[in-house]
Length: 223
Image (cartoon, rainbow, N blue to C red):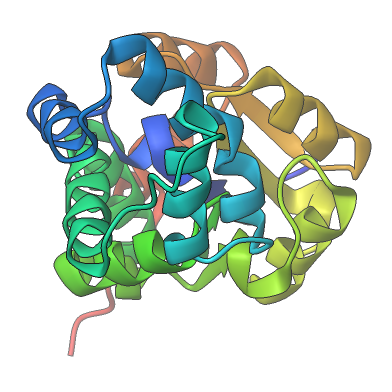
């Protein structure tokens, strides 16, 4: 079995929990859109935003025009700032069991990384909010490289940032297309749905030692 020497985490729905309903309601209020309009516009342009093809400001204007293409219904600068803040809140619910596991790996000296499809203002907002992000060995934000999962090059960048061969990286993501792309570049993978299923799959694969990495460390020498 190829040893795991580094663990690479997706952010959304792996290190974070589900979107915050209160923040989504704020987005609806700011935009004035109904549920279907916001959902359609939000996701239609999200990948170009995450990939760095759009900035946060141009993304939100695309969302505005998506629902009113024949009008001059652009958002004001103050609305965009409110939308950016609410969007950061939307993805700020932490998946505490997964974060605690990542921190246990860090304490054991195992390299950890984040590979996330994420836009410029979103990554800046999360880094400003969560000190724990800085503890990861390397962070690969898609917008910074004008690449995004499932493009193969971004997985290679993440492995290089961890100074680890792809074959020795365990990549965890909630989207099967991202998992399949990681497999194609040689990474070990785990498709995340919930933490109970995650731990059961880790044990099934014989990776129990990673669930409690401190127990696998040699005892500290006296004196």
